[in-house]
Image 1 (cartoon, helix red, strand yellow):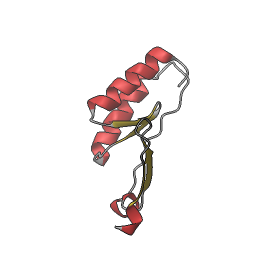
Image 2: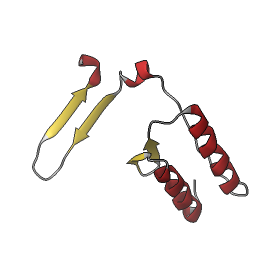
Image 3: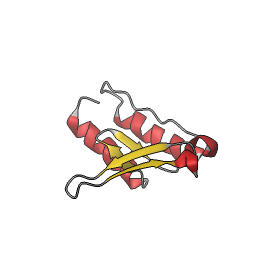
Image 4: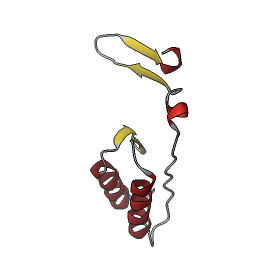
Length: 87
């Protein structure tokens, strides 16, 4: 999304559904299919006359359990590499 005011409104909508911001334009959360459709309808209405691309990509519990997360915290120098596959 190139238009900042719309991007901010999109972000606000996603945050209102308790989505977590992973990156500037990447959100993650647990949604039912109906909630995802509800969000999609709101975003479609908001983006009606503005070029943009928002994707809601569901992943199943099995795939979610295979997510690999790499985190780093600067400042105190520790680094955590978490491999959920090993659980």
